[in-house]
Length: 336
Image (tube, rainbow, N blue to C red; front, side, top):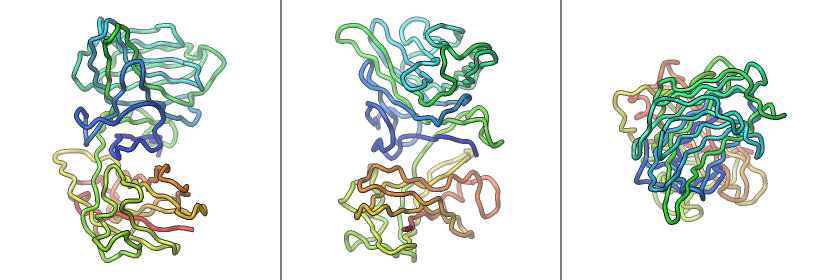
């Protein structure tokens, strides 16, 4: 599997997300929220594990009344800009591909305010056989082959998204949602991400497996279904290794869709700061528990705990169906 990142900001707490930004629940492409970036002030930085080639996707929506404004996706090494995709919010509104600060191609497809667009970029860093390709809503709209290495840096270690604008007292705001990032290894998810929409489903019932201690004498699931998470207000906890809580999950509300992946996610901490871990679990109807890897916790709710990313239903090795998701159970296990 080579999906490096899937992020829809559905946990609404910005844990593990770097930059200056705000969650917005009024304008979103899917799910319950998006990430809002105000022009000239806010930005999003996505760490990347030293990749020389990748495919990046995000949903983008913008509004502005500035005299000049632009939406930027930059691929960088440290603070060095290796290249960028820039969309002018005011005049041409075309996608512009750049190597360093030099424009190497300009698209012909226009964008406009207050509309969600799907942006996709393929980036290969090389001083002779590099590649830059851009798609807008799945349609090819920019390409360049040649030297995509403007300096000495050979790998990308972060992607930065932000707006620029000018005009006294004027604004430019963009919204970002449904981010995906693939590398080129492994034979799966090794090319264009394609369209994708990320939603969250929450616990809505207890099962017979309830080993953890609740913070109040109520149904366990009611203590772990808050979005954003409410920290030490409501929780379940355990001090013995390999105890579990498993919950029923609410119906996903989806219709005629293709489900390409699922994962579990939590906000958890080690109250004793002793380096303990947890693992997140899914349980498909008729199958066995699937556990993600052990995630070492810190003493605060600053760790994004994720379970195994599952591309198919492990019961029949077939694609996930809406009925499978609606029958799914999930939970958490204490680990050494």
